[in-house]
Amino acid sequence: MKFKGITKRWATNTLLITALILLVLFSVCVLFVVSYYNNYVTDYLSGYANDNVTAFFTPYLSVNDEVFTQKSKEFVDSFNDKSRMEIQVINRHGEVCVSSSGFIVNEKIDNMPDVEEAIISSSGISKWRGFNDEGEHIMSVAMTLPDYEDGFSGAVRFITSMRGIDRQIIMFILVVLVVYLISLGFVALSGMFFVRTIVSPLQKINDVARDFADGNFNVRVETDVEGEDEITELSDSINAMIAEVAATDQLKNDFISTVSHELRTPLTAIKGWGEMLKELDGEDRELARRGTEVIINESEHLSRLVEELLDFSRIQNGSMTLRLEKIDVLAELDEAIFVFKERSKRDGIELTYSVPELPAPMMADPNRIKQVFVNVLDNAFKYTKPGGLVNVEATVGKGILTISFLDTGCGIAPEDLPNIKKKFYKANLEVRGSGIGLAVVDEIIKLHNGSFEINSELDIGTTVTIVLPVEEIAVEAPIPIIDETAVDINE
Image (cartoon, rainbow, N blue to C red; front, side, top):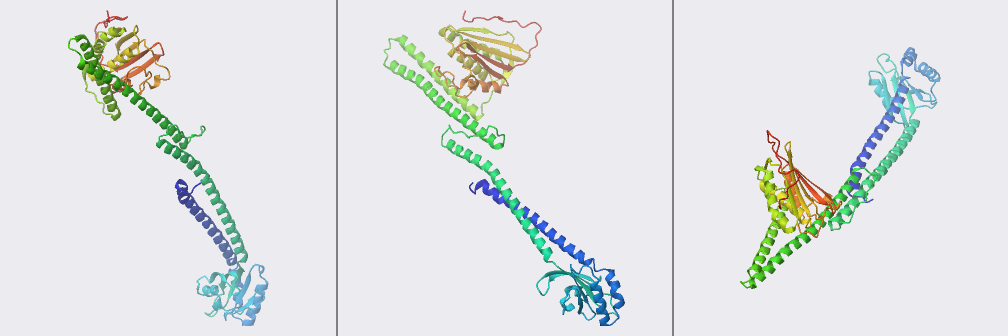
């Protein structure tokens, strides 16, 4: 694992802080143990510097030095813990007259910091830790004897070696150091393993992102199907994004191909008929009329295509707006039906129409509402063969207007149905169209707080249902119906 990025950040932040925290904890632990042992030894020695010592030596403070020395030997000989410590008795001259070690000690109180401090101390007891002349680490407690005739009467020193204690402390420090290193190693290994579980997937995601940025839409992030963590969710989101972009890119390519075809066909017809009319003799008026009609029709087709592209741009920018006014939705539907009456005759497709006489008022954009009806009817006619049927029915109830457009066309395959409202999507590439119309219809209906649903069966037909909120109208009599079955407006 390379020492950079997240790994370096983890090492310099988390691991370093953890190491410092552990070091502080173990240091406090060591200091506590050292202090405990030192206090234990100090208390142990101080326990012998008590009133019993004072009581023993008080009767002999006024005697001569020989008697004091003799009694000091008796005190030392009767001491039970000579094996654990050394006892020194200091006479009034500041000299060590008796020592439990058996050796003659030539030291004076000038070389005994504990005795000097005990003399000036109000308690008459002092503790000291340091090294003797032989370099041995010792601890001592000195206790001065009661003053006699306002002068120094002597003192008793209890001295013990710290060698055993130091050895135990060193062993404890070593154990603590080993535990510290093991703990730090465990934290480092577990942390590196954890970081690796993050860095490795992120590196894969980064590699996939680079390939994706280079235009490879076939790459995918390999994920753990059993994982439910954020990395897996990120991988799934990136895979979904790549799939969506790939689908959009394919739709874009299809759109460019479709629009190119849609533009080429009318432009070719307009150019061809324009050249023909230019060379046409004025006597052939019928041919001139037919050419003019073709040019007009193809120009209208181009205008619709441009308008659809403009609507698509407004949808993408979120700038599609409505010019709201009070309208009768059924009146707009009636005008759209009238527009397709001639087309139904020309294409040989039966058009039936059934709506209530009662108006369906609402605040809406009349041009956009009519655009919805025209787009839906245009699709129905484009995908219905001659001899087929297009049926339009409308019902009003409880402030809801429901309009159904049914055709007996080619239908839509189940796999295409979920995508039929998407921009640029065309289920049937053989039929002319930009693939934007239904996306525009869906957006307009949403802006009017309505719903737009498509149900279809392949080779049977398609039903488009539009639901819009309208104002309720109070009526005193039942709503009259033009024809509860259907009216063939071709008749």
